[in-house]
Structure formats: C-alpha cells, structure tokens
Length: 388
Image (cartoon, rainbow, N blue to C red; front, side, top):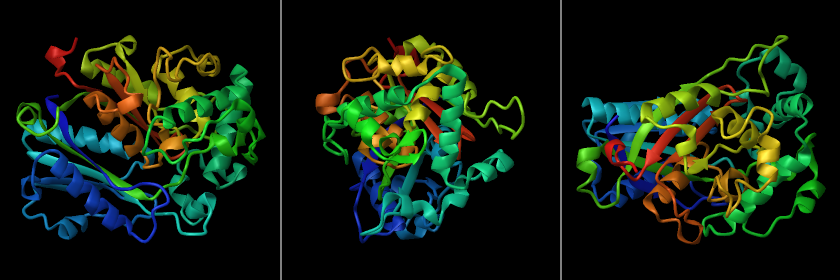
C-alpha cells in the first residue's frame, strides 16, 4: 500500500449548536483540502460516513460543488467506518481508481437543553446488530448491551470497576493537555466510582461523550504527498474484523472483538509486530472497550487488560500512550474519526504538550455496533521502506 494522509480538517466539536450535519461535513472537507495545500477541484473521490443521524450522504458532492468525481460512496459500519473509509481510499489511490480522496464524518445529534443520552434515544436501532435475541432480553439501549459485555468480562477474568475507572482517569489526564477536549478538569478514581450508574457495571464516567461536529482526512499517493503542504502520514496497513457473535452458549460476546482479526491483518500488511507500536488510539465508547481491545491486539494477555490499565501503562508517562487526546471519554466523540484525527496529529508531531516523543508507528482502532464491527489502521510519518 502506497498511500498517505495529507490533509486533516476538523470543525468545532462538542456542544456546538445551530449547524446541521451536512454543514459540518462540508466545512470539514474544505478544511482538510486546504490543510493539504490543495483546492476542491483536486478532489476526485469522496467517501462519506453517514453517522447516527443519517443526515450526510452522497449529496454532499453537490454541497461542495465537486464535479466529475471518479469515486463516490456512502459507507456505514458504525464506529468502524472511519478505518474502513481510509482503507478504501488508500486502495483507490494506490490502484489508480482516484487521485485525491476525501473521507468525512459529521453528526449533530445534540440539541440545546437535551441530555447526551436523549440525543441518541431515537436512533438506538442503528446499534442493534448481531446476537439479537440476547440483546433483546438485555434491552435496546446500547449502554445496557455494553454493560452486559462488560459484566461477562468481569465474571470471566475478574476485571473490576476500579480497573475500568483507571481508563477514564488516564484519558482525562491526556485530555487536560488537549485544548480541543471537552472535559479537561482533573478526575480521580474516587470521582469515577461515585458517578451515578448508567447500566451497572457502567458508571456515567465509563461512558463516552456525545458531540456535534465534523472531521475529514484527505488521502493521495505517497509520491504525490511529498510535494504537498503537510508532512505525509503514511498508511502502512489496514484490516477489518466482523465477528458476528451468535446468541448461544460458547459465544465470544464480551470476551473477544474484531480487533483479534483486524489487528493481525493490519500488522501483517504493515510488516511489523505489535511490539513496534508506539501509540495506540483506540475506540473508547466505554472504558470496558479499551480494556478488551488492548487484550485482543496483544498488548497484554487475555484477561489482563484490567491490571494493564490499572498499572498506569496507558497514561501520560506510561510505556504505551493510549488515546492521547482524551479519546471519546474526555476529548470529543466523532465516532471512528476521534482516534484517527488524534493519530494524524501525533504522527505529524503536532500534539503540543501532549505530543509523544516516539511516534514512528501509530495504531488506530474503530469499533462499531455492539462489538460487531472493527477496523484497524497502522500509520507512520515514514514510508514503509524508511520506517526506523
């Protein structure tokens, strides 16, 4: 694969009201194209993630005034979509299907005076895929279903709520260093434990934010990237995993995710091992998701994710920086674009006070549905032959 991210565009994110998802999407694409030192007329491919509100679709082409596109598609695998779009874009520019491809996500579920939970209440059907009988019994709310998964992990491996809390505390420490983060106030484990239950064993502070905004990246061939405005971020490997856990005895639901498939595939394509990863930007819709994803990638053994995070390994100063912008728990919630945008910032060396000195290899994960879909991307500031 010989592709690179050359443009990154982000709108204001968080409690930003009065703008539609298509407006956010168009703004993000324009910013990403300008960031690359290109103009909209250079773009001949557009991939759109429709988000939870389903308000952004291929009509974005007309809003942007794009003509004669060679590639146009709306993609949907929930929180895994960003990684899937990036893989498709990289393949397209490498094969000659397109020259410059923009990948965009935007959403505006939050309304003034409305709680974060209420923002998704009418759209929960989009998360209800796989193991339908089990999840119908558990309840239609995605948080209830993730609580079921978290509880199974706890029962199988002895994982504790305090260990989940260690994820939230570590990521709040990263968020304090990120001027774009929504939640920057210090957080203690005691505050995590005292936060109200949403669906036991998940506290309020185990759950991600709900944000309005948009984010986009621009992808082109690596040889063209060298002449553009920003240092290229090379796409070394991509992978997907869709486990389809059945609602039956012996199912791996809650114990394993698609990271166990997509991770090795992406690493193999990149020609590296998990030990080569310097930074991990993981999809963190819940603290539990970080724990199980760390295990499935092989950063620690199965069942050891809780103790791994409790030892401070993922926090600032730890040996494996994870979610260095605060993630979706404390930073902002742009579906799979949250870990991807932070990965680009880190790979470029533009993280400011949160910049990780060693950033040769950055792993990015996306998780969709209720552990139904997974994407993995391996990024680097160096081309494959020049890495290390």
